[in-house]
Image (tube, rainbow, N blue to C red; front, side, top):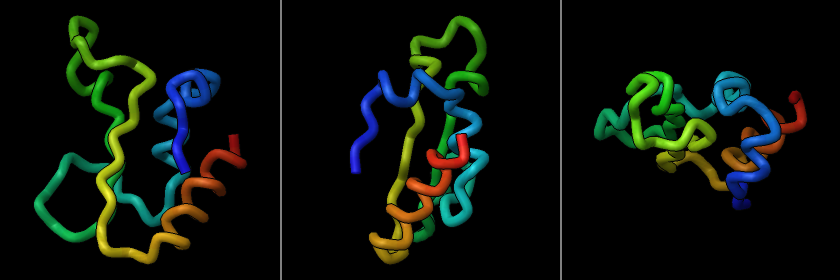
Length: 77
């Protein structure tokens, strides 16, 4: 599954991140769990990071479980 920026732009990226259940909302901790990060609000208004960018770090969870988690988060918008 790939979400283009135009798809994420239609909803609030933070809402997608909050709707995820398997992905932890965190900066990379060097662990094995899947992570999601909406970096722009953390860096502030002068950041070059696009507002609609969600960074996904894929861990060792089953791919089908991660895909289902992303699908349910998007369906809830």
